[in-house]
Image (cartoon, rainbow, N blue to C red; front, side, top):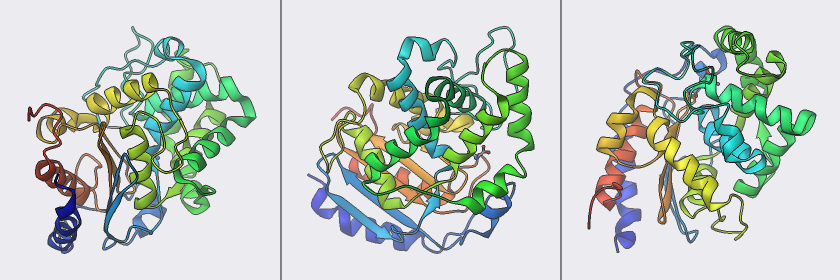
Length: 309
Ligand code: GLN
């Protein structure tokens, strides 16, 4: 049982990486460029709700792309897997998160972890829930974190006024009949979900809910069906880290999702959820310290899914 030493290990890991300010904060969303690059948090929640934390675990940050597994899960839960699969594939794209490359022949985006796929998920949620779609996401986040969700309006406004590329993607997909909802409404829902705030402590609880097959570790509430969680973790494994997903799977061997605000979550199924926050990003748009910390935690605890033990 590695858990007794886990707290000491996290403290040491946090201290070791504290001075590593490699990378750069996201600039294309102007408000994110103001993030404090020193803020650094690591949080682990086991499926039984035990937590191990180091650093600034109560500092809020916006979910950005870490929201994508949850909006996808909500779509699977509310609309059904068969229907969702007709609109978004589950194939790694090998492209960056904001790629505008679309396979016109196949007429669905590659996967729900890249922006194109997440935008189609937003349109599916809009189609299903209309003006209640964002409320559904808020309710979900409240169930996952156990407190009223907050949206960062500065980030939302900042991203909205510079979202030319996401706007291009959603309008192009509308033109190709990849979605049937209003492109601007679809974009707004997506940007709102990206601007939802969590802390690192919250995020490890969210990851732990996925680790326990959809049951919240503290409240005991079943939030997702096991089949939904299996689907989401599969896609996180193959696509969650975009064009470094193969390398990540090789080295770390856990389903994971990153976001450009610097959040990173990884899931050890049946065991624990891991969350890291640190704003400086590598070339793929993953938190630099997030990647390092997660690698070392997975190594230390022997979490790689394909390590026989
Ligand atoms: N809101 C961001 C965007 O659409 C999310 C991207 C990310 O976190 N990788 O560009």
